[in-house]
Image (tube, rainbow, N blue to C red; front, side, top):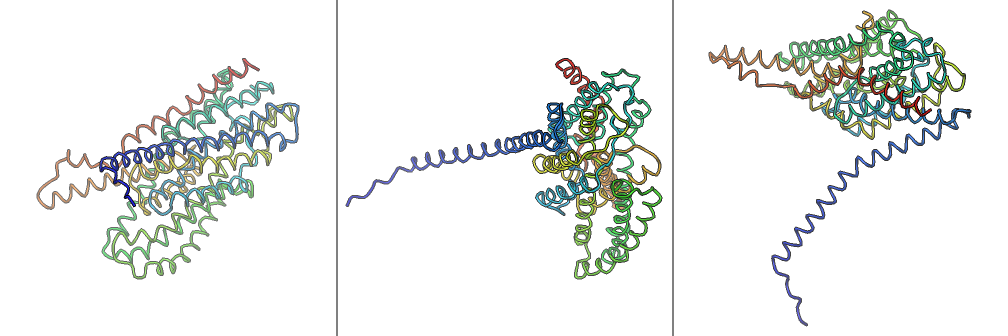
Amino acid sequence: MTSQPTPPQNQWKTLDKDLGRIVQLEQALLFVSRPMIAISLGVLFILVCAVAAIVLAGGSSSTVILVTAAAFGAYMALNIGANDVANNMGPAVGANALTMGGALIIAAVFETAGALIAGGDVVSTISGGIVSPEAVADPDTFVWAMMAALLAAALWLNLATWVGAPVSTTHSIVGGVMGAGIMAAGFGAVNWPTMGQIAASWVISPLLGGVIAALFLAFIKAYINDVPDKIGAARRWVPVLIGLMAGAFSAYLAVKGLRRVVDVSLTGGLLLGLSIGVAVTLAARPMVRRQSEGLENRKKSLKKLFALPLVVSAALLSFAHGANDVANAVGPLAAIAHAVQDGGAGAQVTIPLWVMIIGAAGISFGLVLFGPKLIRMVGGEITKLNPMRAYCVALSAAITVIVASALGLPVSSTHIAVGAVFGVGFYREWDAERKARRLGIEKGKPVDPAERGRRKLVRRAHFLTIGAAWVITVPMAAIMSSLIFLALTAFS
């Protein structure tokens, strides 16, 4: 029996190289196909919503308009899920309190629950009084204006997600309505004082969120992190912080997130929040004591005490977001359905259940399919977060909304959350610089200011990109909406 000849060594090397190229090609194809799969599923969802609108709307003489509007609404909802929900889940994921998969599941469940259980029952047909209803009294003109606003806002959100900038969905739809309203009825139809308040929120929202988050982080560092007995300090103050979170979110949900279920005044919401906060503080003390038993007296041990409250806060933020921001996706769609079916643009429009389902499902699908990109950016690329810093961000988001409501200030939840992340990062920079300067003085070797200035803990590129996106959101959405309105009316 003759033995088979052994292939030369260089032949094996050639084979290994060929196999390596095949593996690289497969990996490249997999990388390219993943976004294509998400896009394909997104398109399929839009088509399903368009077809379902025919059945769910109960039939209409203007079926084509309703189907098109449903498709635009589904597209808008997908983009809200892709862009806006990252603000709620990003800090928890960045702090490693949640995995990406866990964050997507929790957010999808609570966003959907918030939208369907407590979603806006009544929405202004012209998006919160941006354009006077009397100025666009013609039903056909009104329908095209809402169509243009919806599509422009969705396109702008899609572009912002693509470049990695979390922007306000409310500002996007407001800009869209403003641009279409100007094209439909002129500059006089726009409520400019309201637009001035919205412009002011570009500065008010992130500043309030950042300052409050930085103050909480300073408190945690001064009274828990930097004291000799860290575990004893944690047992004393962590229950208070958990109770404060419970009270803040209770007031937040009562005032902002549960209007459809029960109408609660700001005073009533604050009293409810105070009661729940005290009760949770008392209940949390034995829990924190049990969790802290056996922990080492070091900063790393403290992170475990904030992990569960951080997950709960992220879930509550998602519920409140679903309750409030679903109207950005389906408000114009509901207005179009009302105009088509009832023949006019009323002052207020009740959102039908089928429209709410499209909004709720779209936000969840958009989050799962396209949300991870901005979740990673908000949670890990602006500044480094741990459970304590992320907890300050979540707590700031709830408290800032309550403070702004009490003062009558217009704020954006997106701007608040991202501003809080920046606030935490800039506080860490300032604190690190202060400690370096003090340590240098104590050792008799002051650190050079230029050297201290190089220790940046916040990525400036994201700061500039996000800030620019916030400023141009309303005008860009308005320009896009006006152009889309002209195109729609030209071909109608």
